[in-house]
Structures are given as structure tokens and as C-alpha cells.
Length: 245
Image (cartoon, rainbow, N blue to C red; front, side, top):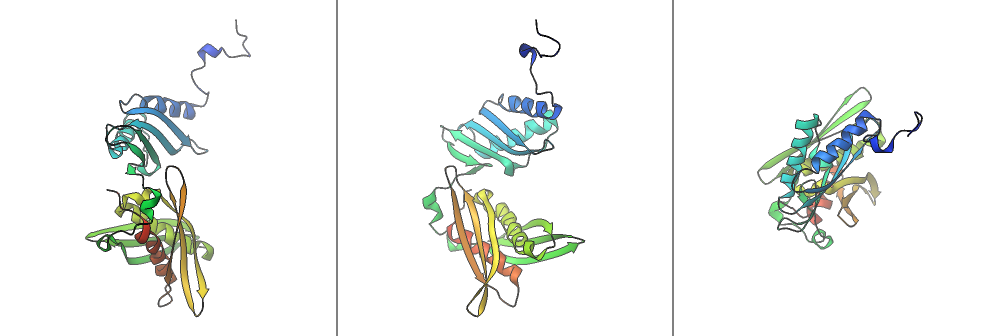
């Protein structure tokens, strides 16, 4: 018989932490979906999901898999999952392949092929507003007849300003280009090149098997460094980022 000091292993169905137990239960519930073979949820210090990794069959399009996962989490547990944190890897089937956040993965070769000129995304406007020690940046992008506004919030520190603009640009891109879900800002800075100031940005593009670094640059015009940073992000993505519908 087990002592009072040692729990009976046969009765250990949880971690003792109510939040983590709920996450484990959510993982089990997700695995009950017909197309889901395995589920793993990563949380932050307070128990909020930050990453959701799903291994699924290829019968459904990954975007539908993501929507099903969101529905189960919200309806059964009251947990609202951001689609951008859901990574779906599919095995077999017509919709097979490796996918992330409901977006098909892109091969390294595809990154080197420029997209059509008509698919190029252009900058419309950059705006920033400060509220105390915090800054909110809005970047408006246009792709053909579609417009998207990206947001990024952070410190008003001058060292953070360029990175916030780049992050807001990526946020807008994700609304226009599905493959941009896999992109994140690596660096964003203004450099002096000869007699001109030039914005230089590097963007990390995470594929299933590796991480690739895209770079872009833009000359600062009319002393508008923020616009140059945004254009540098577009220079990196427009030239190499394949559009996946």
C-alpha cells in the first residue's frame, strides 16, 4: 500500500497544477479530432499557450485543421488560440506536406525566385504615436486591390524604433501574404553608406527543416527613416518570399 507521503502512481492523472492539467486535457481533446495524430502545447510562465504543434493527416487543408483546433479550444475550454501560434505538420494525403499556421511551407529554392511584379506589395503609410513610455506603430501596405494595417507596440526608446516599424510591416504582410506567417524580424537599422543613410533589415524565414535569412535595404528619403525601414522589409520579402494561397 502506498504511504500518505508517496502518491499512488496508478492514480496520478494530473500534474497537480490546475492550469497545466487543463492544457494536458486540451491536448488530449485535440487528439480526438479525426485528422489529428498528436498535439503538443507550449505555454508561458502564467500558463498561456504560446506554441501549438500539431501532427495531422493530409485529408483536410491545414487552414481547416487550424480552424477546427481553434473551435475545440474555445468551445470546450474557453481558450482563444491565435492562428499564428499553431503549427501543423501533415503526413500523406493530397493536402500533405509540412505546413505552419495553416500555410504551406516554402522550399529553399522558391525563396530565390522573385514573385510576379503584379504581386509586389507596396508601402502606403507609416505612423507612430507615443503614450508615456510606450509607442504604437502602424504600417499600411497595399497589394493590388488589398490593403492591410500592421501594428507593433514597444518602448519609446530610440534603439527600439526601427525594429517596431519592421515588426509592424511584417504584421501587415502576414495579412496579405500567407507565407509571411513564417517570417520574423531579425535586425533593423540605419547605416551610413557613402553620403547616404540606408535602412538595412534582415528577416528570418523559418522553414520546416531550416531557418533562412532574407535581407533588404532602402535609401532614406526626405529623412524619413521609418518609411525606409518598411521599404527595406518589402525589399527582402518582395524579391524572395513566395506567395502561398
